[in-house]
Length: 284
Image 1 (cartoon, helix red, strand yellow):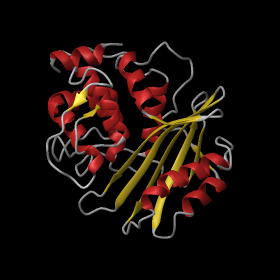
Image 2 (tube, helix red, strand yellow; image 1 turned 90 degrees about the vertical axis):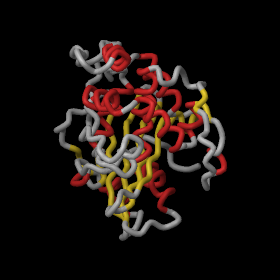
Image 3 (cartoon, rainbow, N blue to C red; image 1 turned 120 degrees about the vertical axis):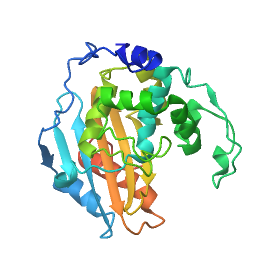
Image 4 (cartoon, rainbow, N blue to C red; image 1 turned 135 degrees about the horizontal axis):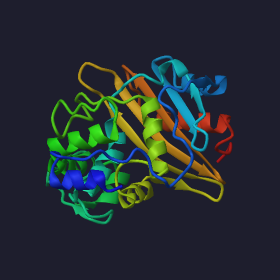
């Protein structure tokens, strides 16, 4: 279970093969090639974002691996992960010892930016919640290219390509991941099935808390980026815990002309689809 942590701490040479899966659960993650059933209701939710927006939403039953989609023809489309990659960079930072725990402070670089809430020292969990890009860029620089490449290869993240700069590859560089791959990765995180320590996975799952009610809990992460020469990409990925059931989702939207509502549309499309499938309740 600690194979990746040891390899990352000691360097990538001589790293031994990592475990294939955890014994912590019998529930299978979605198979990479499993067909996704098209949901007309989920498709309507995606289309409601407007004619200038294209995208898809993919939802998996974490117990069975069954996949339902809105615009299933797009769920294998690889796109820049943007700040959804903070899930992985936080895991790798914890595994390498670059940061000790969720309460460890990441110093501000003293550069004043147009988001006043991030112009200060932030602990890891606050930087994650605020999606503070400069603080996570600092962590990834400290991880370094060799250890980060080894981590992505070992985890099997997207196309595993960190080209474009060690603090830019997930924002404007070469890294790409599809909605199907996002769902598979998150299902593994949910089930303690990534080749990292259970401690690191538990810390990241806790930081992903987005909303908790008596009926359900959402753990999720947003992402937004405009790679050079490409359309703006907006993500919302995570899962919904409701009763004994858990459903993992990945929604991604693309547009050449983002409006003021584009950020909110990522969440609105996801909630609409989850409500249409009776995973989230309808209403406030």
